Length: 589
Figure 1: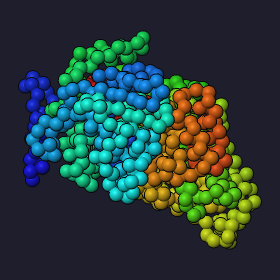
Figure 2 (figure 1 turned 120 degrees about the horizontal axis):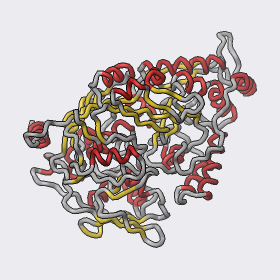
Figure 3 (figure 1 turned 45 degrees about the horizontal axis):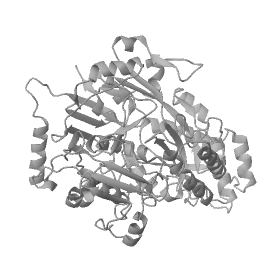
Figure 4 (figure 1 turned 90 degrees about the vertical axis):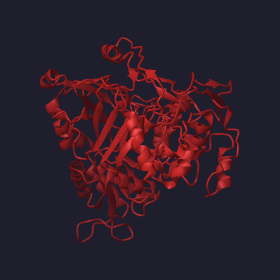
């Protein structure tokens, strides 16, 4: 009761606005359920979108700059870096405070350098089991040893280590074993968000439901898988929007709309979980949602497309006349279908298992689904690293060609015989059934129809195991599936963010294929200490050849994002690396 009362008072504080100021509310929707709001425990895009608004990373991304630029957030400037590139020193701004919470026992709690020391160590704590545990464990001096000493027990946070320490109350120092050129990008994403140790101690295993940060918003209500409400953090520092736009007319318009206003402008963010596209679209058309995507079945009704160039599109006249705004770009993402390399049916590195995976890949017609389901709003993926991300090779062709005849011949060659029931058996004569984990929505069912056709082409049985996305995420982490559709959207525009998806050290977190290849891992470990350039790109090509041979993935696409905003939304611009842009917006109905 005491906790509920304190939270209610905090909400009241967040609504104490000048009498002439009507509350500004932004209404948005997720297409799948979130999993929680502890930055160390989650990695899905929906949870990360909320986390970005509650917590503060050391650095952040410039909202308007393209290519994406990293800028200071809670630091007085960019870090100073030693001559050998191994030591980074950050100076925090003074007077930044956490949102009010009972864990602070009525005191106003200032952000200090020790909070980032705790946060970084916590990502490696064995008892937290963070999906981001590989971020620093083997990179910071002394951290791997501290983790090894803990074993399966809680990390000893009080033992000082050279790799992450404070020099004074507001100065943080990170010391690495090897160069970490992508570090500024990592620190600007939603991975390393300052957490207060006393908050985690207070809520224990329930930290996902009690996020407390120094960011512009705080959690007011959470009905898991249904609704989330964020309200202003009454302790948030005084900041104003200040943009320096280039020649781009849209950027100049945003600067005119937002410059000089208090950051953020929105008082409350209401987030609904609507997993079907049609209800989401109707809510946007009626004005109930302020921002929305265009449902794939309706793309041609909303956009005027150029059949000769998928990169060209514009809103049809009826929507332009309403003042609807379009934010469109090819996402820094790759979609793929991950085989569980530990699964007894589709996993493993024997020739017959590789043949089965390749046959399944060749039986699926990606160009057909780009045409029919994506409505042309995607391009074929052919490389682990997608377009517009440093390290992408546009000339590499890794995707298996659509060739059902060759797929059947391959299965015949490796002993997958067709039984009396018309379906193939394993080479040892036992039943062959592929476990496919999928979702319950209408679009999931449409994808399943195309996958059923693919399996029918090669006479292989498939079992579609249906569950919500947050439940799917648990199956992926536990390597408890056969095949699953997946996607990775860039946290930052560098190839390391994608190459890490197949690194053996990330099995159980971001390596959803549960793939361990000594050859790939060796090349990856060499690549991650190199800056963007020809030397690293050569390693990436070798890594892609290994993956094409082993086939832990079936390559999907990179999709175009078609984001819409109502005419009353100000400051609207799609950003490739923020999971959500709500804090940069204003609404003037």
